[in-house]
Image (cartoon, rainbow, N blue to C red; front, side, top):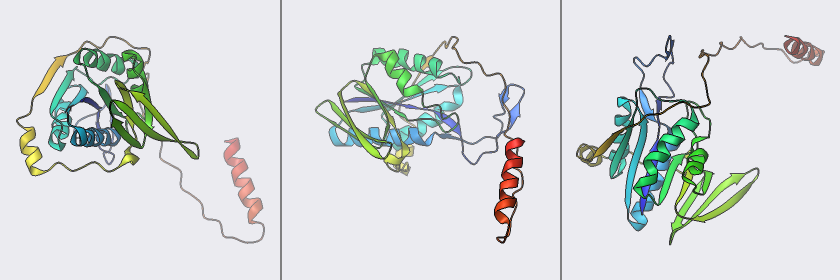
Length: 246
């Protein structure tokens, strides 16, 4: 089975983000594979281990994303595909279109992605990618099996669990709660240096989304401690009323 895993490189969750004149100032940032995507890599590797196949890690973005592809290769992916562009697009329509154009001619049986990225958390790319490919799609997946070409997935819905199945090819969005990804071994890191990363230059075009402004959220105001006692309920009500009026 040929599996593609779409990964996004995002700033580390502990990084201090600075806004520059051209958007996010990338100087000094530490970059990681978005955790949901990292779990998608793990699921692809488990499927390959159970029934054989080939796993390709795909990343869209500038030159720095090759380090994310190398990390996926060190985990155990067989090859990489870098869809090279000058800047990382924010528009899910543009991203899905570029991924679909690369995936469509390569005859993959299954495409795994993270349910969402940790920087934008839009949860749009898996569905839009599936629409562009005209493939079935299921997201927020916390359990995944593929048996005889049939994908069986489970995902939480309200207070219950929903079971979904479809025949390959298809797109699956993985939630990181599905399980912890493996750490690259020393052997895997050494082997990753010899694995192939195909570089394809892509023209992204325009999309419907426009970013007008980026800003760091304002710091939270200091809290207040109220001692419990007679009349405390009135004081709390007055405080809440004042905040609502503001």
